Image (cartoon, rainbow, N blue to C red; front, side):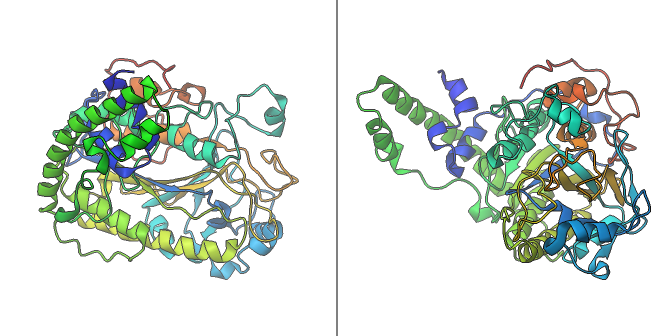
Length: 504
């Protein structure tokens, strides 16, 4: 193992869960190759940011987006929903926030099944964003290696399926990598940064900024995350004081003791100390850049709630506000808002959680409008998996496809993209369980590919960002994977080097 591999791959693997070493690793690996010609954007400012919010634990997203209109066959959608969800269902249609003029697109030949939709009673802010065209839903989306159209194909054994479909650890990783046949893939945000990070002026600070320490989404071949807290006042930016093992004591001693007299142990310890010494120099440089930039954060008058998710999004808005001081043309942000593994107490739990989400998303969008960058920022949500539509008596269990949200000024909002599944477990060809467990109609690849094209990735580099994309989509002018982004202000470059689609 050499020093470069140690920085890029290990992330101090034995201690890689700490924010400190995650940050240090990030700062030592920020030399990406520029993919596309970023000057080809026609917007007033050549800046774009992606904000990924992970709802870890597996959100019950069939209680966020709820049908209430008639079905394709003429049945009452809300009655079907109530019948199958029983004690988990919202009990009155009047309590839903109605989505106006809902257009549900269908996908890959599959119908949308319902004519009208509402959102959970706690999601007023989301309904406002949707109804003003600033937010869209991705319906029945999930991890796929290749298209699986029905239960027969699923059971045939002829289709490649994701590893550990119902496993939290597998699915939470696969949503971040979009390579569900591997447990050791790079993250989508990391691959984006490998291609585009060099466009940013200050290479000491990664274009990937995490509010949740080390994560898979932002891990690339050459670029990792720069971890910060949500307290981004100038006096609080940077890393913790030097640890006790700076002078070869403390954790280093423990590390050696764990494999007594082992040469490997001694080499690892020395390498860790040398790497820490070098990356600390970079840390000081990045600290100074961040600290000076954050002195210029303007007053943001948009009111944010005091929840942790809202605090994280306010911190993101503040960092975006000094993007020019940071020399940033491209940035990704990663947030984790957990607490969704509700095998019981689902009704009350969802009410509390969705209130936090809806209020925080509305405040964040309003803040990007205040800062004049609403068209430059796209926020999207991901989760481990959907949950069963039938009740286990107290809550819902692990399933597969679910619903996510995409928000921003460049989003073609006010629509539901995908094939919302029929809420009837006996007459749905995509249902693979008596519990109501749906094969996804949209792959994570297709959602990420559209975001990547908007972000400025050349079509010829999409295969590096998303190795499985060729199973779902081939680029051609004015043909986009799903259709939820507005490309009117972006010229897609067709002149760049191809990458290997076989690189995970």
